[in-house]
Length: 428
Image 1 (spheres, rainbow, N blue to C red):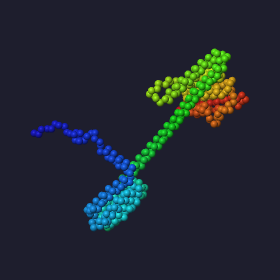
Image 2: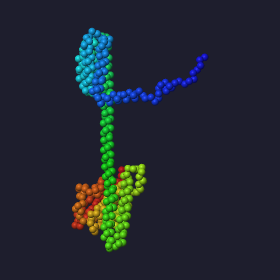
Image 3: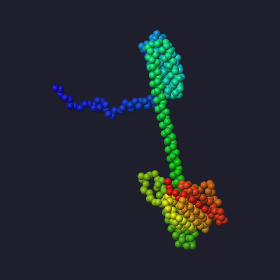
Image 4: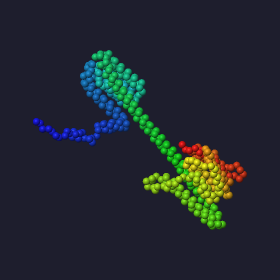
């Protein structure tokens, strides 16, 4: 009785199939990429190489091997050599002028069919057919089919060996296969080119969207910084002027003005630091910014008190209730009032007073800010939209579909009026 072998069968590693070995397809892919790279860098060198290989194979066949398949083995050697050159040399122009290369081969193909030499080099016409399918319009491919078909008819007439399908069908199959393969490669190249073009367009659109977003963010930041710094500096300037005037008359009033300047400065620095903390890129290393709500309608009283402390008496009148007005619209109303009072404080002149009238209706909010300051001929006209303050107010208003009017009052004493009308619908 034979002894049973208990050893396990050899696995892939023992059989030489190393699991870490590189697949053959990967090597072929790299080899193909190298060939394509050489073709792109030195196309003439590659054309000469391909033509030389085909010429060598044709001359080897012309040395005597052609007689094994020839219908007539008495064809002169010089004619065989000439036909071999006629089928190979035109391959140099197969990519730039494929149809011309095929037409140059046509006389040699007719001579090959009429003489009965039946050279294997005649199949090199398929290389020209491949390039026609790859680079020229489809109607040109039809004409190339006729160019290949004529020598077949001549050969079948001169040497009727076997049935007609034995002479026509193999060549027709070869033509159809080569043409179809060329069309497949062409479709893939066009598809890849469209993907590359689409990727470039998407990259351009992405860059444009990023630029637009950056521009919008810069505009928003500039508007916020203008509202924060401009208003607080105007209040500080008014307090400083009032303190300097009161220093000689009432030291106590001067001390109060200095304290108000300190409070306003610290508030401005806090808001500015909070804004700059958000803009810093070092998110991992920076301290967490202190969170604070944006100004709302409930802060209008404090705003009016600060402006009044800076030397601009303000009369605030509020009618109705804001209800469920969104925070963004409340901030817009606050910033418009703030900017209007800041302009009155800066441009109104001495003895200027201001009034703020806020009215909440069922479908809208209206705000009217007027002052009794001197005529402001140097102020930017509403039609031009110049000046960052008025521009910022209009931009904020336009975000919520509102309207803003700003201009001088038509009365002997002068003055300035800002009127805001904001829809009260909830944000979508």
